Length: 172
Image (cartoon, rainbow, N blue to C red; front, side, top):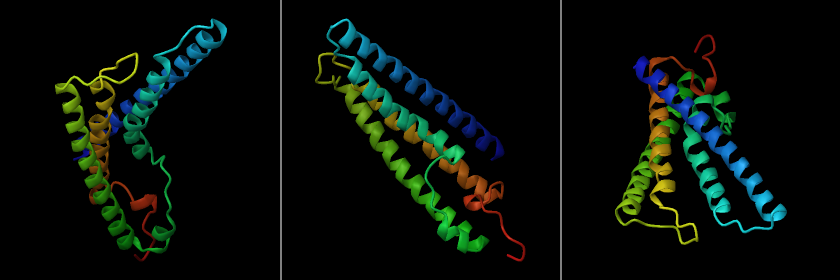
């Protein structure tokens, strides 16, 4: 179980690096677009679409890293007032519900990607992007996010991680 948790953490860190690189690429493409459009007075037709796809991919692919580092917004008012058992129950409930959502989203994203692949969908723009490429970020991002939730559940069960990062107090 510890090997699984470590492997998923490594994979989530890779997702974080990939998301950062995609964000950097989006910034570079926007700068390119500004120069081409306003300095060279030429048309830009692919830059806006690419930046949109990169930002969406950054969100989906970067989400496992955000969960790994607990970078998401977290309201911990209720867990602060619960004892260790209550925190554990709430953390398990929240993680299992989130895992179920991510599995459904990964499966639905896979079906969408497969349909775009089989039917050779193209974007309805001048650039005509093969839609399976941006749709691939759905099953990949949600799939790895599901693995990260599963690793978090294993860490909670194994006692390697305190629920909500709040250690049990003496006497609980």
